[in-house]
Image 1 (cartoon, rainbow, N blue to C red):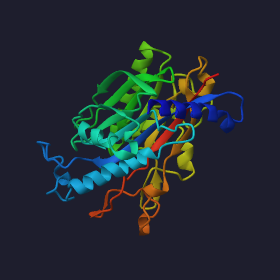
Image 2 (cartoon, one colour):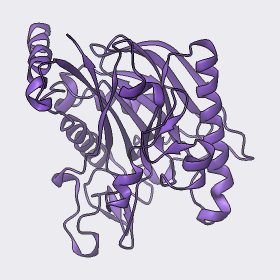
Image 3 (spheres, helix red, strand yellow):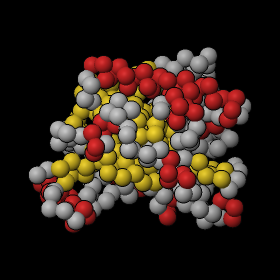
Amino acid sequence: MMKRIFLLTLVAILAMPSMWGQSKQYQSFGVAFYNLENLFDTIPNNPLGRDDEFTPEGKNSWGSRKYWAKINNLARAIGAMTTPTTPIGPAIIGVSEIENRGVLEDLVKAEPIKKWMLQIVHHDSPDRRGVDVGLLYNPRLFRVLNVTNHRLDIGFPTRDQMCVVGEMGGSKVGVIVNHWPSRLGGQEQSSPNREAAAALSKHIADSLWSVDPNIGVIIMGDLNDDPMDKSCAKVLGAAKNPDGVGPHQFYNPWWKMLDRGIGTLAYKGSWNLFDQIIISGNLLKQNVTDGGVYYFKAQVNNFEFLKDTEGSRQGYPLRTHAGGVWLNGYSDHFPTEVLFVKEVN
């Protein structure tokens, strides 16, 4: 198995020059995010009843058949996140809407991705819905150095922000995994909660840079806001264009994508792009001088099999339930991915 993985990685490196039309060789690393839409187990184990609807007796009749179907569906979606230059999938996959570590353990053992031997970083948050964020990573491509979790104080319990520091392609990066507060009560009325979440992410980034000014920072997650909203555009200052973005500033590659009508979730005919991966300026080629990894491109992994084909939902993400009916789908969000490259000669 290890010999086969080595050969696949070598093929990936050698394949790169034909993609760029240059004589240089590159290695590619995928960094993805996926909202797994209520990945709960079937056991009623929350003392506050936060998981009641995801039990065999709950309103979703959430039993073993449905649970294992969702696990395998999600594994299929993650398993499809390969390219000619990332044949063993992303180096990092941030996830949200998971009940506990156990569901991630089941996920990484599912047949479509079992061979990747993904590892898990997880932390129990105080969220009032009982969901957390987490990180899956391929230890052949990413090495974890440190993990910290950060509480967001907005007057009610919500998801903690997880910061995972590690090495990817020899470069040190800090990955901040988020699931910002929802738009419950209205977008404008709830915006201050997401602005506070953005301020916390920026504070974490600034703290990382105070220790190591050269560390790359990746802010990812279901932000419940679009790139042009205040939390992203003003508080984080994540720019629409990479030109002029300084090493300790942020570039948002999803802004122009949403302008073209490409999103990750839809409601009443309108697309949003909440599932963002925002990168610091020192991960842009113009600011990389030490041979480290740098941004190449971003993509919404809206594979055809992830799309609904029925009626008014046609083309939308094929979710697990809709209108109280089990659709045997994947998630109400499409996954997103950013590709980084490193010159190897």
